[in-house]
Amino acid sequence: MERGLSRNTVAAYRRDLARYTDWCVAHGIVDPDAVTSTHLADFTVDLARGGEGHPGLSPGSVARCVVAVRGFHRFCLLEGVTASDPARAWRPPKTPRRLPKAMPYDRVVALIAAAGAAEPPMGVRDAALMEVLYGVGARISEACGLDVDDIDLEERVVLLRGKGSRERRLPLGGHAAEAVSAYLVRGRPALITRSTPALFINSRGSRLSRQSAWAVIAAASDRAGLTGVSPHTLRHSFATHLLEGGADVRVVQELLGHASVTTTQIYTRVTVDTLREVYATSHPRARTT
Image 1 (cartoon, helix red, strand yellow):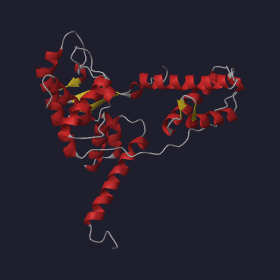
Image 2 (image 1 turned 90 degrees about the vertical axis):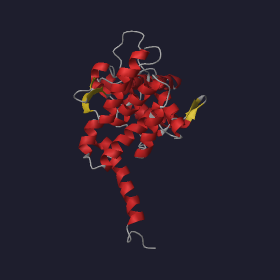
Image 3 (image 1 turned 90 degrees about the horizontal axis):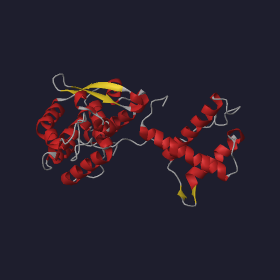
Image 4 (image 1 turned 120 degrees about the vertical axis):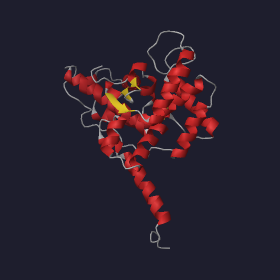
């Protein structure tokens, strides 16, 4: 509540803390003050190794669980529940930085066209959804959370509500603005069955859920003959194409809504790899053999 985290993050931390308390009880620990650094190290090992009926977690999931438990012990100390914080020096395991997967621009165009090929009014809605996801680099939850009043087609701006309740006003490109305008005229009125401020709605007239938006992308991918496409693929493509076009990484950070530029800099590795590939295949002195 105090940090303004998303419901999904809170739910994940809740599961992590439930896993931790179950582990503590199973090892005879019923008082937070009885936890030691050795206990925490053993807990980390068990998370990765798994147990009977509990498969081992991925490095990323282990790291998130460690963060949740560290927060719990810090809270206990601040509230006077414990006299010390055994997790103070405990650090989450390093996780490999996976390069984000971006699609070439022609495949993005094919995906959007495939989304619009669905029967109306769904096709009009799906094309508008795709254009917004790629056009402003929105997260799927941000796009599904949009209200009609969050988009100003005259000024071509959109208001997104991101992680930590942070808001950002972003420019809406011409293609996205046209797609949203078409949806508001020819798509949304045909889907409305009740009063709702939601921009993207389902066949029952309710706000489009994240799961339904995933299904829209999966169906469009199948029609376009593409594989491995997720909502975040469009966000990754948005950032990568901006950097390849010469955008400053700080500007891309603002557009993506990243709290730190360090998060955004992973996209620069993608563009460097692209430059290296082009150089290796194009420059006459790039290779020694």
